[in-house]
Amino acid sequence: MKKLLGIFAILTLLAIPVGLYAQVEAGAGAIKLGVHIDTGYRYSAESNNNPDSNDVYWQGYETFNVENVILGLSGKVGDKVTWKINEALVLGTSGTATLLDANVEWKPIDQVGIIVGRQLLPTALANAPHMIKILHLNQAPLMITGGYNAPLLIAKGTAIPLMIPLPSWQTGAGLDINFSGVNLTYTYYNGELQGLNSLAGGNDMLTEADKEKGGIVSLGYNGEVGPGKLMARAYYFGESSDINGDEPDSSDLAGWGLGALYNADKFFLGAEYVNKTWTPQDQIQDALDQDNVNQFGWYGLVGGRFSSLEVVYRYDFIDYQNIDSDAARDIDTEQWHTIGVNYLINDNTTLGMNYVWKIPEEPDGVDYPNINEFSIMMELDML
Image (cartoon, rainbow, N blue to C red):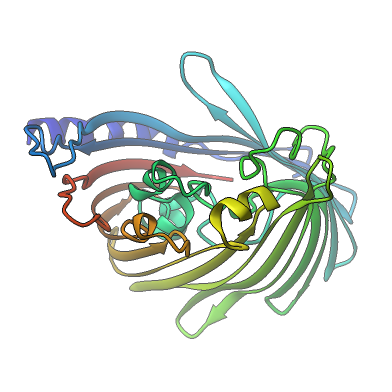
Protein backbone atom coordinates (compact mmCIF):
# COMPACT_ATOMS: atom_id res chain seq x y z
CA MET A 1 0.00 0.00 0.00
CA LYS A 2 2.86 2.40 0.82
CA LYS A 3 4.34 1.71 -2.62
CA LEU A 4 1.01 2.46 -4.30
CA LEU A 5 0.51 5.66 -2.33
CA GLY A 6 4.04 6.73 -3.21
CA ILE A 7 3.39 6.27 -6.93
CA PHE A 8 0.15 8.29 -6.69
CA ALA A 9 1.98 11.08 -4.83
CA ILE A 10 4.81 11.32 -7.38
CA LEU A 11 2.48 11.41 -10.39
CA THR A 12 0.19 13.95 -8.74
CA LEU A 13 3.09 16.28 -7.86
CA LEU A 14 4.37 16.06 -11.42
CA ALA A 15 0.91 16.91 -12.77
CA ILE A 16 0.36 20.10 -10.78
CA PRO A 17 2.82 22.35 -12.66
CA VAL A 18 2.20 20.60 -15.95
CA GLY A 19 -1.56 20.85 -15.60
CA LEU A 20 -1.29 24.58 -15.10
CA TYR A 21 0.63 24.96 -18.38
CA ALA A 22 -1.46 26.81 -20.96
CA GLN A 23 -1.26 27.01 -24.70
CA VAL A 24 0.94 29.86 -25.86
CA GLU A 25 -0.47 32.12 -28.52
CA ALA A 26 1.45 34.76 -30.43
CA GLY A 27 0.74 37.21 -33.17
CA ALA A 28 -2.94 37.68 -32.33
CA GLY A 29 -3.59 33.96 -32.43
CA ALA A 30 -1.45 33.26 -35.49
CA ILE A 31 0.70 30.59 -33.77
CA LYS A 32 -0.37 28.12 -31.09
CA LEU A 33 1.83 25.77 -29.05
CA GLY A 34 0.40 22.51 -27.72
CA VAL A 35 1.73 19.58 -25.70
CA HIS A 36 0.67 16.02 -24.92
CA ILE A 37 2.38 13.89 -22.22
CA ASP A 38 1.52 10.39 -20.96
CA THR A 39 3.55 9.09 -18.01
CA GLY A 40 2.63 5.62 -16.81
CA TYR A 41 3.47 2.97 -14.23
CA ARG A 42 2.79 -0.62 -15.32
CA TYR A 43 3.05 -3.79 -13.23
CA SER A 44 2.49 -7.46 -14.03
CA ALA A 45 3.46 -10.12 -11.49
CA GLU A 46 5.73 -13.08 -12.18
CA SER A 47 3.69 -16.22 -12.88
CA ASN A 48 4.34 -19.97 -13.24
CA ASN A 49 7.82 -19.50 -11.77
CA ASN A 50 8.11 -23.26 -11.09
CA PRO A 51 6.51 -24.48 -14.32
CA ASP A 52 5.49 -28.05 -15.03
CA SER A 53 5.95 -29.44 -18.52
CA ASN A 54 2.65 -27.94 -19.69
CA ASP A 55 3.13 -24.54 -17.98
CA VAL A 56 4.37 -21.34 -19.61
CA TYR A 57 6.60 -19.07 -17.51
CA TRP A 58 5.94 -15.32 -17.27
CA GLN A 59 8.67 -13.12 -15.80
CA GLY A 60 6.38 -10.13 -15.28
CA TYR A 61 7.50 -6.50 -15.28
CA GLU A 62 7.42 -3.26 -13.29
CA THR A 63 8.24 -0.05 -15.11
CA PHE A 64 7.69 3.67 -15.39
CA ASN A 65 7.24 4.79 -19.01
CA VAL A 66 6.92 8.15 -20.68
CA GLU A 67 4.62 6.65 -23.32
CA ASN A 68 3.63 9.61 -25.48
CA VAL A 69 5.37 12.97 -25.63
CA ILE A 70 4.10 15.18 -28.44
CA LEU A 71 4.93 18.83 -29.10
CA GLY A 72 2.72 20.65 -31.56
CA LEU A 73 2.68 23.94 -33.40
CA SER A 74 -0.24 25.19 -35.44
CA GLY A 75 -1.18 28.45 -37.00
CA LYS A 76 -3.14 30.40 -39.56
CA VAL A 77 -1.95 32.36 -42.57
CA GLY A 78 -4.64 34.73 -43.76
CA ASP A 79 -8.27 33.69 -43.72
CA LYS A 80 -8.08 30.46 -45.70
CA VAL A 81 -4.79 28.67 -44.90
CA THR A 82 -3.86 26.80 -41.71
CA TRP A 83 -0.82 24.67 -40.90
CA LYS A 84 0.10 22.07 -38.29
CA ILE A 85 3.32 20.39 -37.08
CA ASN A 86 3.28 17.67 -34.39
CA GLU A 87 6.48 15.92 -33.31
CA ALA A 88 6.53 12.80 -31.11
CA LEU A 89 9.58 12.38 -28.88
CA VAL A 90 10.80 8.88 -27.97
CA LEU A 91 12.85 8.89 -24.75
CA GLY A 92 15.59 6.42 -23.85
CA THR A 93 19.35 5.97 -23.98
CA SER A 94 19.35 7.67 -27.38
CA GLY A 95 16.38 9.97 -27.84
CA THR A 96 14.68 10.11 -31.22
CA ALA A 97 11.88 12.13 -32.74
CA THR A 98 9.13 11.08 -35.15
CA LEU A 99 7.25 13.55 -37.31
CA LEU A 100 3.50 12.91 -36.93
CA ASP A 101 1.81 15.86 -38.60
CA ALA A 102 3.29 18.37 -41.03
CA ASN A 103 0.58 19.67 -43.29
CA VAL A 104 -1.04 22.71 -44.82
CA GLU A 105 -4.81 23.04 -45.29
CA TRP A 106 -6.40 25.43 -47.76
CA LYS A 107 -10.10 26.16 -47.42
CA PRO A 108 -11.45 27.79 -50.56
CA ILE A 109 -14.80 27.88 -48.74
CA ASP A 110 -15.62 27.20 -45.10
CA GLN A 111 -17.05 23.73 -45.81
CA VAL A 112 -14.20 22.40 -47.96
CA GLY A 113 -10.56 21.82 -47.08
CA ILE A 114 -7.64 20.49 -49.15
CA ILE A 115 -4.92 19.03 -46.89
CA VAL A 116 -1.43 18.36 -48.24
CA GLY A 117 1.41 16.79 -46.25
CA ARG A 118 1.78 14.31 -43.41
CA GLN A 119 -1.48 13.72 -41.54
CA LEU A 120 -3.34 11.28 -39.28
CA LEU A 121 -5.66 9.27 -41.52
CA PRO A 122 -9.28 8.93 -40.32
CA THR A 123 -9.54 5.27 -39.30
CA ALA A 124 -10.55 4.01 -35.83
CA LEU A 125 -11.40 6.67 -33.28
CA ALA A 126 -9.07 4.78 -30.91
CA ASN A 127 -6.14 5.04 -33.35
CA ALA A 128 -4.82 8.20 -31.66
CA PRO A 129 -2.52 9.03 -28.73
CA HIS A 130 -5.20 10.64 -26.54
CA MET A 131 -6.05 7.49 -24.57
CA ILE A 132 -7.68 8.73 -21.37
CA LYS A 133 -9.28 11.81 -22.91
CA ILE A 134 -11.01 9.83 -25.66
CA LEU A 135 -11.17 6.21 -24.40
CA HIS A 136 -11.05 6.83 -20.62
CA LEU A 137 -8.41 4.09 -20.15
CA ASN A 138 -4.61 3.75 -20.06
CA GLN A 139 -4.35 1.13 -22.81
CA ALA A 140 -5.24 1.25 -26.50
CA PRO A 141 -7.75 -1.41 -27.56
CA LEU A 142 -6.59 -4.93 -28.36
CA MET A 143 -7.73 -4.51 -31.98
CA ILE A 144 -5.09 -1.75 -32.34
CA THR A 145 -2.13 -3.16 -30.40
CA GLY A 146 -2.48 -6.95 -30.47
CA GLY A 147 -1.77 -9.01 -27.37
CA TYR A 148 0.01 -12.03 -25.95
CA ASN A 149 -0.77 -14.46 -28.78
CA ALA A 150 0.26 -12.17 -31.66
CA PRO A 151 4.01 -13.03 -31.62
CA LEU A 152 3.26 -16.69 -30.88
CA LEU A 153 1.52 -17.00 -34.26
CA ILE A 154 4.85 -16.23 -35.93
CA ALA A 155 6.47 -18.99 -33.84
CA LYS A 156 3.85 -21.39 -35.20
CA GLY A 157 5.23 -20.76 -38.70
CA THR A 158 2.16 -19.02 -40.08
CA ALA A 159 4.22 -16.37 -41.95
CA ILE A 160 1.75 -13.58 -41.05
CA PRO A 161 2.56 -10.22 -39.43
CA LEU A 162 2.05 -9.77 -35.70
CA MET A 163 -0.75 -7.30 -36.46
CA ILE A 164 -2.14 -6.29 -39.84
CA PRO A 165 -1.74 -2.50 -39.49
CA LEU A 166 -4.32 0.23 -39.68
CA PRO A 167 -3.06 3.26 -41.60
CA SER A 168 -2.01 5.98 -39.17
CA TRP A 169 0.16 9.01 -39.97
CA GLN A 170 0.99 9.07 -43.66
CA THR A 171 2.02 11.60 -46.29
CA GLY A 172 -0.45 12.43 -49.01
CA ALA A 173 -3.18 14.77 -50.20
CA GLY A 174 -6.76 14.81 -48.98
CA LEU A 175 -10.15 16.41 -49.52
CA ASP A 176 -12.20 17.25 -46.40
CA ILE A 177 -15.86 18.29 -46.69
CA ASN A 178 -17.79 19.42 -43.59
CA PHE A 179 -21.40 20.42 -43.19
CA SER A 180 -23.59 20.51 -40.04
CA GLY A 181 -21.28 18.19 -38.10
CA VAL A 182 -20.98 15.66 -40.93
CA ASN A 183 -17.47 15.05 -42.26
CA LEU A 184 -16.64 13.35 -45.58
CA THR A 185 -12.98 12.79 -46.52
CA TYR A 186 -10.85 11.15 -49.17
CA THR A 187 -7.05 10.90 -48.89
CA TYR A 188 -4.50 9.47 -51.34
CA TYR A 189 -1.29 8.58 -49.50
CA ASN A 190 1.96 6.64 -49.29
CA GLY A 191 1.28 3.06 -48.17
CA GLU A 192 1.50 1.34 -44.79
CA LEU A 193 2.68 -2.10 -45.93
CA GLN A 194 6.24 -1.88 -44.60
CA GLY A 195 6.99 -5.01 -42.57
CA LEU A 196 4.38 -7.17 -44.28
CA ASN A 197 6.54 -7.94 -47.30
CA SER A 198 9.43 -10.34 -46.62
CA LEU A 199 10.97 -10.01 -50.09
CA ALA A 200 13.93 -7.67 -50.52
CA GLY A 201 13.05 -4.45 -52.33
CA GLY A 202 9.33 -4.99 -52.00
CA ASN A 203 8.64 -1.93 -49.85
CA ASP A 204 10.65 1.25 -49.45
CA MET A 205 9.03 3.83 -47.18
CA LEU A 206 11.79 6.39 -47.83
CA THR A 207 11.69 6.52 -51.60
CA GLU A 208 8.44 4.69 -52.39
CA ALA A 209 10.39 2.82 -55.07
CA ASP A 210 7.69 0.15 -55.05
CA LYS A 211 5.07 2.79 -55.95
CA GLU A 212 3.10 1.67 -52.91
CA LYS A 213 0.04 3.86 -52.50
CA GLY A 214 -3.24 3.82 -50.63
CA GLY A 215 -6.58 5.54 -50.56
CA ILE A 216 -9.04 6.00 -47.71
CA VAL A 217 -12.57 7.34 -47.66
CA SER A 218 -14.39 8.13 -44.41
CA LEU A 219 -17.77 9.44 -43.31
CA GLY A 220 -18.09 10.80 -39.80
CA TYR A 221 -20.20 12.89 -37.46
CA ASN A 222 -19.12 15.05 -34.53
CA GLY A 223 -21.81 17.03 -32.74
CA GLU A 224 -24.44 17.30 -30.06
CA VAL A 225 -27.05 14.55 -29.79
CA GLY A 226 -29.47 14.64 -26.87
CA PRO A 227 -27.70 15.32 -23.55
CA GLY A 228 -24.20 14.59 -24.88
CA LYS A 229 -21.75 14.68 -27.75
CA LEU A 230 -21.45 11.96 -30.40
CA MET A 231 -18.30 11.06 -32.37
CA ALA A 232 -18.95 8.47 -35.08
CA ARG A 233 -17.02 7.26 -38.13
CA ALA A 234 -17.12 4.66 -40.89
CA TYR A 235 -14.17 4.17 -43.25
CA TYR A 236 -12.70 1.99 -45.99
CA PHE A 237 -9.07 1.88 -47.12
CA GLY A 238 -7.06 -0.01 -49.71
CA GLU A 239 -3.31 -0.17 -50.41
CA SER A 240 -1.12 -1.91 -52.98
CA SER A 241 2.61 -2.19 -53.60
CA ASP A 242 4.56 -3.64 -56.50
CA ILE A 243 6.97 -6.50 -55.77
CA ASN A 244 10.33 -6.44 -57.53
CA GLY A 245 11.27 -9.68 -59.27
CA ASP A 246 11.12 -11.71 -62.45
CA GLU A 247 7.32 -11.94 -62.41
CA PRO A 248 4.83 -9.11 -61.75
CA ASP A 249 3.49 -9.38 -58.21
CA SER A 250 1.94 -7.24 -55.51
CA SER A 251 1.21 -7.10 -51.79
CA ASP A 252 -2.19 -5.61 -51.01
CA LEU A 253 -3.99 -4.45 -47.88
CA ALA A 254 -7.64 -3.50 -47.48
CA GLY A 255 -9.89 -2.87 -44.52
CA TRP A 256 -12.94 -1.20 -43.15
CA GLY A 257 -14.35 -0.22 -39.79
CA LEU A 258 -17.01 1.70 -37.97
CA GLY A 259 -17.53 2.99 -34.47
CA ALA A 260 -19.07 5.59 -32.20
CA LEU A 261 -18.26 7.21 -28.85
CA TYR A 262 -20.95 9.06 -26.90
CA ASN A 263 -20.05 11.39 -24.03
CA ALA A 264 -22.62 12.99 -21.70
CA ASP A 265 -22.22 14.75 -18.36
CA LYS A 266 -22.93 11.68 -16.20
CA PHE A 267 -22.08 8.75 -18.48
CA PHE A 268 -20.23 7.68 -21.62
CA LEU A 269 -20.25 4.63 -23.87
CA GLY A 270 -18.81 3.46 -27.17
CA ALA A 271 -17.91 0.60 -29.47
CA GLU A 272 -15.73 0.08 -32.55
CA TYR A 273 -15.16 -2.74 -35.05
CA VAL A 274 -12.34 -3.16 -37.58
CA ASN A 275 -11.81 -5.78 -40.30
CA LYS A 276 -8.52 -5.99 -42.28
CA THR A 277 -7.42 -8.30 -45.10
CA TRP A 278 -3.86 -8.78 -46.30
CA THR A 279 -3.31 -10.33 -49.74
CA PRO A 280 0.44 -11.10 -49.83
CA GLN A 281 2.73 -11.80 -52.75
CA ASP A 282 2.49 -15.19 -54.49
CA GLN A 283 5.38 -16.69 -52.54
CA ILE A 284 3.58 -16.25 -49.22
CA GLN A 285 0.22 -17.30 -50.68
CA ASP A 286 1.85 -20.56 -51.74
CA ALA A 287 3.31 -21.07 -48.25
CA LEU A 288 -0.08 -20.41 -46.61
CA ASP A 289 -1.99 -22.36 -49.25
CA GLN A 290 -4.60 -19.56 -49.37
CA ASP A 291 -5.01 -16.20 -51.08
CA ASN A 292 -5.26 -13.86 -48.09
CA VAL A 293 -5.26 -13.43 -44.32
CA ASN A 294 -8.19 -11.80 -42.53
CA GLN A 295 -8.04 -10.19 -39.07
CA PHE A 296 -10.87 -8.52 -37.14
CA GLY A 297 -11.49 -7.12 -33.69
CA TRP A 298 -13.84 -4.98 -31.66
CA TYR A 299 -14.34 -3.37 -28.28
CA GLY A 300 -17.20 -1.97 -26.22
CA LEU A 301 -16.92 0.41 -23.28
CA VAL A 302 -19.29 1.96 -20.75
CA GLY A 303 -18.71 4.27 -17.81
CA GLY A 304 -20.10 6.81 -15.41
CA ARG A 305 -18.90 10.19 -14.19
CA PHE A 306 -19.36 11.33 -10.59
CA SER A 307 -18.09 14.87 -10.05
CA SER A 308 -14.32 14.55 -10.71
CA LEU A 309 -14.28 10.73 -10.78
CA GLU A 310 -14.90 8.37 -13.70
CA VAL A 311 -15.50 4.62 -13.49
CA VAL A 312 -15.18 2.66 -16.76
CA TYR A 313 -15.32 -0.92 -18.08
CA ARG A 314 -14.16 -2.12 -21.52
CA TYR A 315 -14.32 -5.50 -23.25
CA ASP A 316 -11.86 -6.25 -26.09
CA PHE A 317 -11.79 -9.12 -28.58
CA ILE A 318 -9.55 -9.97 -31.54
CA ASP A 319 -9.41 -12.83 -34.04
CA TYR A 320 -5.89 -12.68 -35.46
CA GLN A 321 -6.24 -14.72 -38.62
CA ASN A 322 -8.22 -17.24 -40.68
CA ILE A 323 -5.36 -19.59 -41.64
CA ASP A 324 -6.37 -23.21 -42.13
CA SER A 325 -3.90 -24.62 -39.61
CA ASP A 326 -4.66 -26.47 -36.37
CA ALA A 327 -1.58 -24.96 -34.69
CA ALA A 328 -2.66 -21.41 -35.61
CA ARG A 329 -6.35 -21.94 -34.80
CA ASP A 330 -5.41 -23.00 -31.26
CA ILE A 331 -4.19 -19.49 -30.40
CA ASP A 332 -5.83 -17.15 -32.89
CA THR A 333 -8.19 -15.29 -30.52
CA GLU A 334 -7.74 -13.16 -27.43
CA GLN A 335 -9.92 -11.08 -25.11
CA TRP A 336 -9.38 -8.49 -22.39
CA HIS A 337 -11.55 -7.16 -19.57
CA THR A 338 -10.49 -3.76 -18.23
CA ILE A 339 -11.81 -1.71 -15.32
CA GLY A 340 -10.59 1.80 -14.62
CA VAL A 341 -11.00 4.72 -12.24
CA ASN A 342 -9.99 8.23 -13.35
CA TYR A 343 -9.54 11.42 -11.36
CA LEU A 344 -10.14 14.53 -13.50
CA ILE A 345 -7.60 17.04 -12.17
CA ASN A 346 -8.71 19.70 -14.66
CA ASP A 347 -9.96 19.90 -18.25
CA ASN A 348 -6.54 18.93 -19.62
CA THR A 349 -5.07 16.60 -16.99
CA THR A 350 -6.28 13.17 -15.81
CA LEU A 351 -4.90 10.58 -13.39
CA GLY A 352 -6.08 7.06 -14.30
CA MET A 353 -5.78 3.66 -12.61
CA ASN A 354 -6.58 0.45 -14.54
CA TYR A 355 -6.60 -3.30 -14.05
CA VAL A 356 -6.65 -5.55 -17.13
CA TRP A 357 -7.57 -9.24 -17.20
CA LYS A 358 -5.82 -10.61 -20.29
CA ILE A 359 -7.25 -13.89 -21.59
CA PRO A 360 -5.44 -15.25 -24.67
CA GLU A 361 -6.71 -18.48 -26.20
CA GLU A 362 -4.62 -21.41 -24.90
CA PRO A 363 -3.34 -24.32 -27.00
CA ASP A 364 -4.62 -27.75 -25.98
CA GLY A 365 -2.72 -29.11 -23.00
CA VAL A 366 -0.92 -25.82 -22.20
CA ASP A 367 -1.38 -23.71 -19.05
CA TYR A 368 -0.78 -20.04 -19.75
CA PRO A 369 0.52 -17.78 -16.96
CA ASN A 370 -1.34 -14.93 -15.30
CA ILE A 371 -0.37 -11.94 -17.48
CA ASN A 372 -2.84 -9.44 -16.00
CA GLU A 373 -1.66 -5.84 -15.68
CA PHE A 374 -2.13 -3.01 -13.18
CA SER A 375 -1.34 0.50 -14.39
CA ILE A 376 -1.44 4.14 -13.34
CA MET A 377 -1.13 6.93 -15.88
CA MET A 378 -0.99 10.70 -15.81
CA GLU A 379 -2.17 12.24 -19.08
CA LEU A 380 -1.83 15.86 -20.07
CA ASP A 381 -3.54 16.68 -23.38
CA MET A 382 -3.38 20.21 -24.75
CA LEU A 383 -2.99 19.60 -28.47
